[in-house]
Length: 382
Ligand SMILES: *Cc1c(COP(=O)(O)O)cnc(C)c1O
Image (cartoon, rainbow, N blue to C red; front, side, top):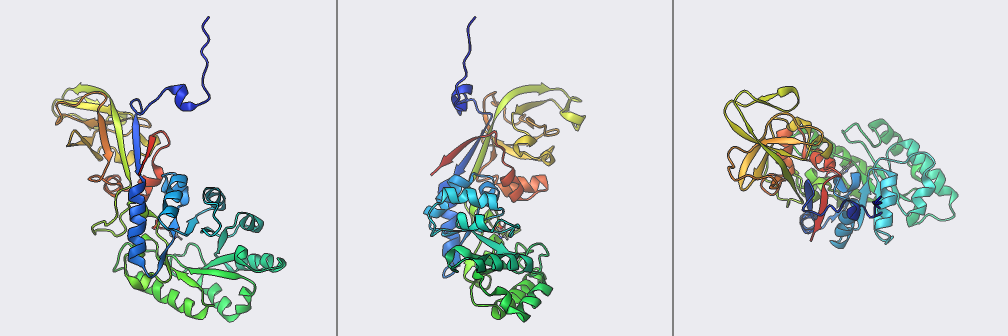
């Protein structure tokens, strides 16, 4: 009997070249670098850090972080300590600073030192834990630095107002803490006229004036575009680097970083009265042609795109009909008479961006980006 052996290399095992992939995700690292330079130039004389949490917003933290570092980025943030440890392995140059936004978890201090990371201290308990740990060391140097975050109105992470008052009344609580940054985070910066914006800015300004003088950073992507008052010493963008729209209802100055195409697996002629997909939520009113694609909600093509998403096939706009399934979705291609099995449908591109698709899903561009599936063949360009 013939024995079939499998290679350890997954690509060789499946012999699945791009010509077989059901979906191809293209990530334009040139556009990513351009977006970083655009924001850094806009922010100057302030500096630009980069937030690369959630695997670089879903695009692969390795290629993302090395591209940003090559574009000049010197300060990075992740959400979690594990993400920061992985990032340090990608960026071993210790002049590059890596911070952890989500705060100091008990008994992790030594890991910060071992991997040359800094925590963002989000409450007085964390400040005390860090101070005690740093005090036990024989030197207070770059290795033990930390950022301090105050909560200026988000009510999420950072010293709440009462803890800030305590800290201002008892400044010795910071003795031995080598403060690197003073930070806060905006709740409504994508809505320029929201009254909370000015309140948060004023509170941050007061805290900054009262605390030891260290470099200040407040703005993520949206606030970075609000104007110079918001930029302080550093901006801290995430989504805009990846092409996301920083401000609601305004033109997006960022370049798109992702493009997604998926292959037509089957085409069917549909008679009036025939229904499409789970739950029979779509019924053809007239004869139609329906194409099935191998992309579904398990790939981050959200179920809320059912009966609503559009895409582009051979230069023409087509629409989802019926529910998105786990691995499949259906499009009405009646208006594209030359559509063929094997054609690539463009689900995300410069004309139909992550924000456009998010609008069709009742989601936000961040969700589309961070949900982009692991089953796509990923192609990095530039
Ligand atoms: C995620 C995050 C950012 C980046 O936000 P974007 O809106 O993606 O630019 C910055 N700061 C903090 C504290 C964050 O949690």
